[in-house]
Length: 158
Image (cartoon, rainbow, N blue to C red; front, top):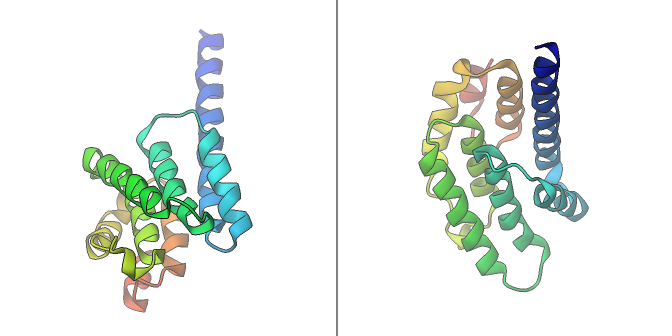
């Protein structure tokens, strides 16, 4: 029984550390092309098929268009379609909403992928208090640096 619990705990810890690495890399990805590449490589290496990991992989596809010269439109379209599909299947997942909001506020306006900013902002504000400590910290860091939130909205995220 102890062995079984140890294996489950180790599996959860291993999975969690992969997710933490993805989160940390994603948070830094927009600051430079090298960080973007590092995030894309990390996302591609992930073997998980859960919604959040798949969401980060979709974001990596979209971000790849930033650093590549060919098939940019196809990369954005494919990544955005994938991200929208994942969110449609998991509409109450706050981390997926953070991913989509960050992509939409950083993608050039000409691309036209900006339709969910208001909805995602409202979702984050309304559901922040229901999250675990790790997710609260992640969401708060995002909100504090986001250009989509007003000072009043930031103050509501404690």
